[in-house]
Image (cartoon, rainbow over all chains, first blue to last red; front, top):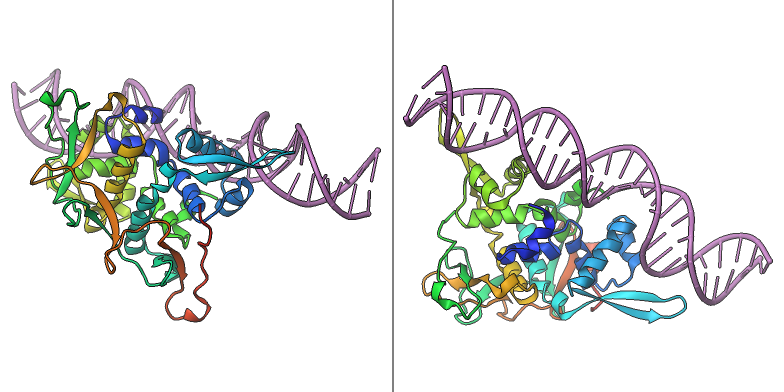
Length: 164
Length: 164
DNA sequence: ATACTGCGTTCCCTTTCGGAACCTGTCAAT
DNA sequence: ATTGACAGGTTCCGAAAGGGAACGCAGTAT
C-alpha cells in the first residue's frame, strides 16, 4: 500500500494519519501552537530541511489545517496560522505529550509539562465521554462501522472485538 | 536533524513522535487495539511490506509499547501484545479518530465512529483537566519547561507565549 | 515427498530525505 | 552602483528508507 492511499481508507485513524502522520507534521503543528508563524523560524527551530518544510506546509494548507496569510507585500510574505481544523488538533497533541511524559523518559529528566495558563498549576489530562462524563478507555469505548446514513440496514458490524 | 535525534529532545511531542511518529506505527497499534496479535494478520490488513512491519514491531518492542509473547514452541512463534505503556496510547488514538471524523472527510461518508462498548451509544470525547474538571483547550493549557527537580532556580521560562 | 503455515530476511528498484547551494524581490547601508 | 541582509522558497546530489516480490526455514499436515 502506498502512503497516499491512506486518505481513501474508511478507518479514521488512517485518514487522520494521512494528514498528520508524517514524521515532521506534528512537530510543525507544535510550533504553530507555540505561536511560530514564519518559515524561517520553523526551519531554524526544527532543523528540518527547507524543501521538506516547504512541502509539509503546502500539504497542511491543502488539508485545511493551516492557513497562509499575507503579512506584507513587496515582496509578498506570508505567515502560517492554524485554522479551526488545525486548532482542533490540540487534544491530540496534549494526549501525546501526556503519554510521552509518562512513557518516554527525557534525557536528564528535564522536560515540558502541561500547566494551566492562568494559574500555572500542572494539568493532568483525562479523556471523557461528554454525554456520560465517564473516562474513555479501551475497555469501555471502541470503534464501529457506520454506513453513509441512508443505508443503516447493513450497519452494526463491529470490527473491534478483540482485547489486548 | 536526523530522525533518531528526536528521542534526545526535551520536548515531549518530539519524544512521543520518536516512538509513534512513524508512518506505520500508529496503524499497527490501531490493529493491536483491535485484537490483532500476529505478524501475518497485520501484514495482510495493513498492506505494509514485511520487512517494514518486522522493523516496526522490533522498535515498538524496544520502546516498551509492545510485548512479544511466545504462544507455541517448535517452531517458536510469538504474538504481539500491548504493554501498559502501549495501552496508555489509547487516548491518543481516540482523539485522533475524533479529529479525523470531524475534519478529514471519508470517501462515501462511511467511516468508523466511537461507541460505548456496552450500550452502543456514540461517544463524544472531550479532554479535561482531572483536577479542575475543565476542558483543556489551547487557550487554557500550555506547556512549561520543568527542570530536573533539583534545579528549580532557573525554571519557569515559558516557551509557549504565542497564540494562533 | 510435497505442500502449507508463520515469520521473517534478502534483493532490487523507486521514492523520499538531509545537506548545501542557489534564486527572487525588496530594502538599507556603503 | 554595489554590497549585504532578509524572507521564503527551489534545485541538485548522494544517502536513507520504502515498496514489491522472492527466498529461507522450522515444523506440521497430507
